[in-house]
Length: 214
Length: 73
Image 1 (cartoon, one colour):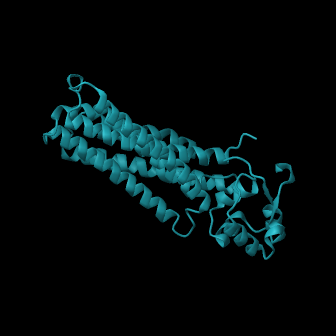
Image 2 (cartoon, one colour; image 1 turned 90 degrees about the vertical axis):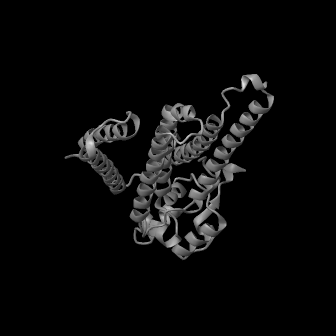
Image 3 (tube, rainbow over the protein chains, first blue to last red; image 1 turned 120 degrees about the horizontal axis):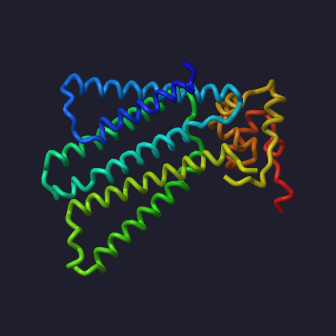
């Protein structure tokens, strides 16, 4: 199957796997059904990843500048940060409703987020193994990452000051929403958003570097 | 990344050294191939240390590899 067709088939399958595992409410598939969905999703994600690597190798053969390790890390980080932030936005209200209680819903949401982080780390570990005999970070990568981190930290500082000012300056009777779980969710969402910005700025810098306008 | 006032002869030197590949130069200097591409395209100015490493990889002086563009003054 050509690479284009592989992407055509695997991208929808990967999204479907993600939706089944993380977006849809709990559906009863039974033990074998759950294992099949999990295994199928992992297979689709793995094949998508290996197809992507193959397409990068083909690009390298043509002499064009393929994304380097730093850029791949940045795009994958941006993708996973965006997915986690989206998941948080979709399900955060369910956590707020529990307001500190260890409900089944809150535990399920927490488990899914941890699972996403584990998948992210597995993908990164596979990438590191792929690049094990090559330099994957050099001074140019560090310069790009430093610039991106500065912006990410800037966003985090702005969000923290905004939250602190809101809590300090808003009359108490208008702070009914500011329950512990809501505040904790806001802080975590801000943290993920700053990571997302950092990865996006880094990925954008790499991409711009490979696609100069002049 | 913006263009830089530092120009270089890396591409010419690579071809003069048995058509050394970008990856081979990157491996010798401890950098990524993407950085070699950015250097050759004039989109990245290396640190002094990297400039020395690149010059050593070709066995020439640093001023043979890198020049300051007079247009930048």
